[in-house]
Image (cartoon, rainbow, N blue to C red; front, side):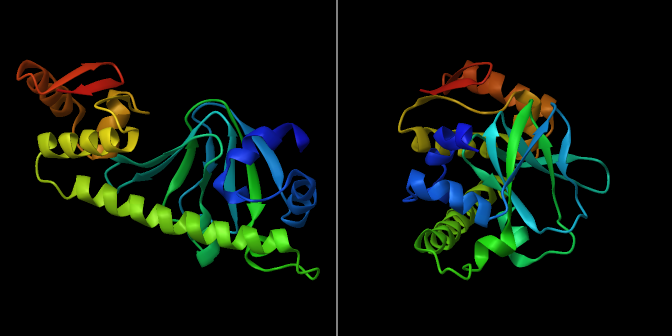
Length: 219
């Protein structure tokens, strides 16, 4: 497990956890590592949730697919970030989303029951994990409301501009790169791809944005 320490140190789940405690903690949490190929399903909608994952390498996407097969990207998860924690902590018998490898990746799985309950030794670092996990879920709730700000807009143009302004604020710059290609961006905004491409072209022509592939600049 020590080869993953560099990325685990960057994970908010292990904030304020010393290296000498990390090995014992991972054992206490029942941590295990699995590898996945691009587009491989990591978690499937309808499965029971009892573990959550930490991306160690590559990236994964949390997605929802409606009755008609339309895909919506809930979030993009990169190294050091976690996914599935809310469903696992809630003890959901059927999760409402799927998690898919966006590229070849490695994921560490944590037993949620072990994470949420202090062990018999009442380890100090175990208490820190519980605190960190609660903070992560609170921040995810804020991100969920930010996503609602986007999807509640009526037009593709409004959704796109709201998303781009959020990204500019997050990056503290009017020039930034987003983690999506055009189809993925359309899935995240829950709009038609052709309509999205048309709006991006219009905004460029109107001198409101500059864009090249996944890089945008608000003018």
